Image 1: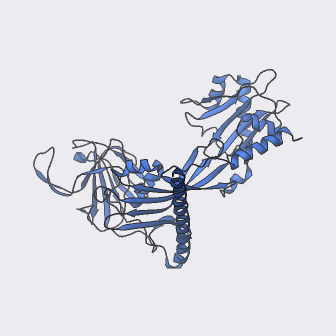
Image 2: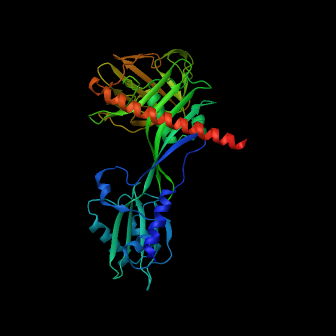
Length: 442
């Protein structure tokens, strides 16, 4: 006859190998179980998490506990205050905190518990011990319980997860954002997609109904909760537009730098982004216009993008903050020096996040969209300065980023072929599944 714990283990692994396929109707997925997935070496020091504190106590042979409850950490509350609030005595709370600190002195577990973080617990009584369990970041759990001698035990475990690959297809029917949501593309993948393609596509003027975008990316799924832990990375992007088609592949060079490149190994990046924010519309172009406040015709030496108040503003390229603060009619303003040729300026911000002299990377958030200074409503006034003179950001031809070195192109082509083969297999599988579905209907 099997031991109860053996039965539990068999049940747990049956659950693991029969997890739900998370592919949506419009996003097709290939599911691969990774237990364990290759991650930083520190993860290899931990056992796997279990479904509940009871399961861990059963495995470790600890003191039985009562009903398991769950509550969330309140604002300005640490674990010490939380335990006292839910019913642990001062003596018990102090002993638990001291044990955690002594067992894991180099890991700031207690400082990294965010507001609204969920904690599972069982209060001790005369005949029953206590149990505490909560996630540490995305991939680990902390368990705290008593052994049969009432000594406090702690254990950090890694959460079991699987990786699924998704091939998502977006067909533009109205705007890019709504079309992406209807396709099932996660919001964080959409933001990354816009950032990657932002160097090559003018989203305000080039998109048309019927344009098709394809994204190949992965997701990590928690096998205990069946929830998505995170969506990334993107491996491949394509855009089929009216006048041109684009394909970009993710590649990590020998020096550890990861970027996206076209089929020939040319960088997807340009020196500067033409539109340093997401989800905006072009509200005013470069050139002469009737000023909306002053009332007379005046040269507009930048472009304006209208978007909701508080929209994040990105640094258009690598560089150093040359000016940060109030600048007359520009309101809250940032200017970045990128090199000896180019500078960019961002005006009417509601908040400024970077100080003068700060070195920043392309895509870093430097502030938020606002309506400060001489402004009629929330928008970003964006300028590109070339040798100190403002030029039209939408028309200037910008140099590309760093391409793949010749001595790494062979490796890049091999990676490209692997990605293409995976995409082909997933398309074929989807077509076969759809055919079988239609056949069954008939």
